[in-house]
Amino acid sequence: TELIFMDNKVWHEINDTVLNLYSLLELSLIYLFIIKSINRRNVRMGMRMLYVSYLLLCTAFWAISPKRLILNSPHLFALEGIIITSFCLFYFYEFMQSSSSKDIRTNPYFIVICGMLFYFSTTVPYYFSTFSLLKIYPTFSNTYSCINYCLYTILFLTFIKAYSCPTHNEQR
Image (cartoon, rainbow, N blue to C red; front, side, top):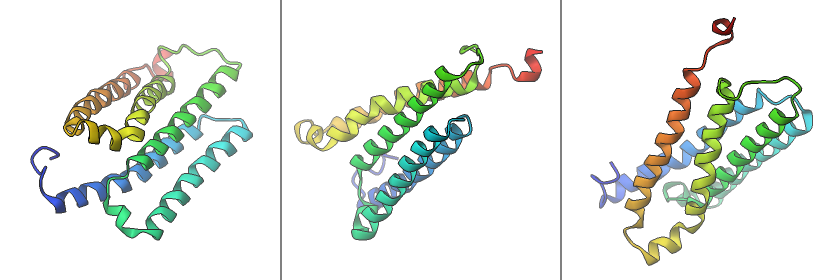
């Protein structure tokens, strides 16, 4: 759709609005996915504070200037990536502090969170520099879309790997 409707202003507004709202959904789902594996109260509180801060920031950002909801907001996506990367690092902290030994090759949470850490930490620099890159290289958006789809493929491969891990019943 990005290539077919390249010059359609209405399509870009719809697409940007959906992406902005999707960032809230994405962050919410990842937050819920990771927080259920965190046992330490202070880590959970830190995650909760980051999550609520992002929701409040987006709400304030769009309430102050509703037109921004229909515009591409790469800086919000960069902030989302930083927060999700932080969530993943909180998970690794909890994982390393855990006394139980787990095989990381068959732990689906570990595999998925590694994929999320890889994807979000590699896309943050792009989102922070997107406007300056587009000024220098006007066609960079198409190039980045291709790179982003490759990174998403790696992320989804970690989902597939995690799904193929044996469950507790199969390990017995």
